[in-house]
Image 1 (tube, rainbow, N blue to C red):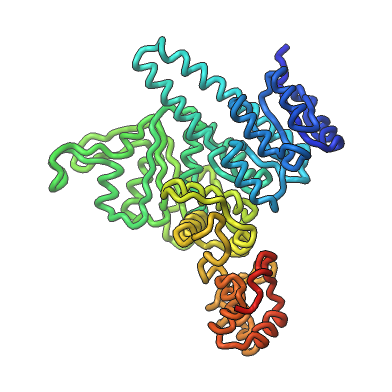
Image 2 (image 1 turned 60 degrees about the horizontal axis):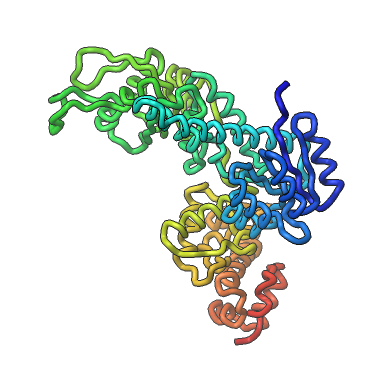
Length: 492
């Protein structure tokens, strides 16, 4: 009988430990501890694969305990139980303890079980990775190269774990669907707004498939001239293209037996749609200037910023090509549809940018995260990364506050106000002149006060108001000041 995977549950509340044990004990050997010291003793005695640890405990916090575990038992998969509001804890966990995943309270037993199974799978794969590394010294150079490809697959495409998210993110369901698609050798159409991470999903699907040890290529065709696109995809024989002195091998041939991800297919011209149709249906193409037809075995993944069904209905996209590319469709959610992931995404973007530019930071303040979470992010992940980089450039303190945020984000309507109208939409909407002017005035007041760190003297001076008039407008519109602004609320 196969031994059950070993899990350590750490929480200072006995009822929480009992609930976790009840959810997991049928599938795992569970050990429990009510504090860091007792947990360390169990770690010395048992071969623990996964730890679930509460963040807030007497003595050592969850992050402090897991940081020590990372040093002494780096293989053990570490999961912290916390809440969305504990932003600083999440940022610390990313940096200090190497957290695999966050689990928010209250958790559901099925969710806990799914996270535990995924974590033990990761532990097993990491052990397999180490075993393969030890075997490499005895293998030939060809086999050694193959093992390196498998290591790359483990690193890049365990894949779906590279999609950063909160533990109960809406994107979890999309990832589970993508895992199912990855295991079948069929084309997949990935649809979602620009900047939602379609290429990340495509790469993860490749490295989770049976083609993971074969090449993966991607090409964004938006804005590429047909002649250049044809050369990149199909290649050309020597002398067939002016200025091309040698044979050109196209991506279709390079990706043979592997995966090719073509993003932006909604912008393909009728000519290129027809050319791609033969590839999608027959796996055949002809390089520029060649007479022979080349056949390849590739998995074709495609990405679109628009719903291709609507493009077909409007005669902008061939229906036969759509059905060839989209036997399965994966809809990638926008950032505003997974806004609960923003604290983790923003923290990762900040620390990546800080490391790239050599500027040490502690993180984003809770007030900054609140403003960022109230914005709709039409540019999705790319826009978030750009905004965080801009804040980093202008920051003077290690903790980045809301005064660094771009004005159009500060002026956006709060999400809980029941409106996401931008200024142009406010001007065009129905309502009295007074109501529309007040809506814009409220946003200007909110942005100015935040940018000036709630220094009311400076804000009143910039806006041409008296302090009494400014205070009256703040009370009238119910604009809340952050707690940390109290010290700046005095006269200058």
